[in-house]
Length: 426
Image (cartoon, rainbow, N blue to C red; front, side, top):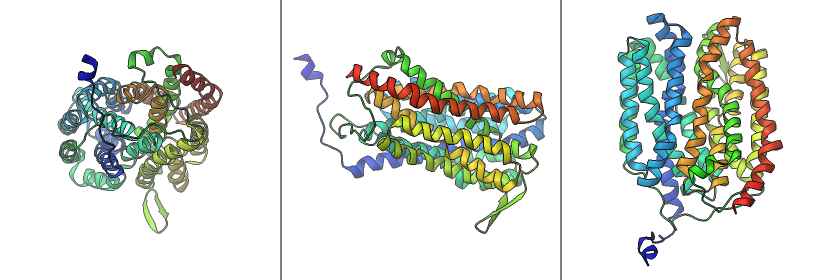
C-alpha cells in the first residue's frame, strides 16, 4: 500500500513543442557559458604581456577551470536528479559571473586561479544540467538531443570572437572579463526560471535506431562505476579530449609561434586575421559537429560513428602539424580538427545513457564528463613539452596518435563489449 501511495503518478505525454522548448532553453544557457572556455585563448597573450607570467603558469588557470567544470558535475547532477534543473542553473549562472569579475580584478596568479575555479563550477553546473535534461526529454533521439545541446557550448562563442577581441584591444582584457561575465550571468539566471525536468510518462520510450544498442535497465551511479566498460569509455574520452583542449587553449599562441596570427586570410570575400578567422570557423564547426554526429550515431551506432570521427580527428591533427604554417591552411585545417573533435560531447553522454539508462542520466553522464577534466591536466603539460623542445611537433604527434588509438578502441573493444553488457543488464 505504501508503495502505491508514494509512487509518482504518470503524466500525460508532453507535446513535441514543449520538449523542443526545453531543449532550446538548454541550448541558450550553453551559449552563455561558451566564452568561459572558448574565449580564454584571446585573454592569454594580454595577461602574459601585462604581468610577464610564464605562459604555462597562466594555462594552469585554464586547467583549473576545466577541472572544476567537470569533476563537480556528478555532484551537481545528483542535485539535479533529486531537485530539478532550475536551482542548479540559477546558482551556476551567478558563479559564472563571479568568476569572470574576479578575473577582471586579478593581479596575481592565485587570484586568476580562484576566478577560474568559480567560473568552472558555474559552467559545469550549467553544462551538466542542460545535457542531462536533454537526455531525459529525448530518450527517442538521445544522440541528436545531446548534440544540439552541446552545440550551444561548441558554437556559442562564434558570434563573440570578434567583439571580445575588439573590446580587449579597445578597453583592455580586464574590462572584457567584467562586461561579458556580468552580461552572460544575467541571461543564464533569467533562463533558469523556465527549466524543468520531465515527469514519468511525459516522454516517449527509448527508440532503437539501426545499430544503436540501448538498455531498459536503470543503473545507479555506484553500480555504473563498478562496470569496467565505464572505464574504457573514460579512457577513450580522455584520449580524444586532450588534443582538442590543447588546441583550444593555445590556438592564438600556436598562431603567434608560427608567425601567422595576424596574417590576413580571405575566404568567400571575407578577410580576417588567421587566428580570428580560425577561431570563428572553429567555433561554428565545433558546434555543428555535435548534432551532426549525434544524428549519425542514432542511425549507424555510437561506436561506428566514434571510429569515423576520431579517425578524422587524428588525420586532421597530423595535417595541421604538416601544413598549418600556411595561414589559409591553418584556418581550414584547424576547422577540420574542431569538427572532428566536438562530437565527443554528444557521443559519450548518449553512449553512457544508452548503456546505463536515463533515470540517473545527469549524474552518470556527469561522471563520464569528468574525463574532460582529467584531459585538461595535459594542457599545461603540453605547454611544458613545447617549451622543452622549442616547437609544437611532438605535441601534435602525440595528440594524433591518441585519437587514432581511440578510434580503434571504439570498434575493436567498446562495440562488442557494450553489446554484451547491455544484454546482461537487460
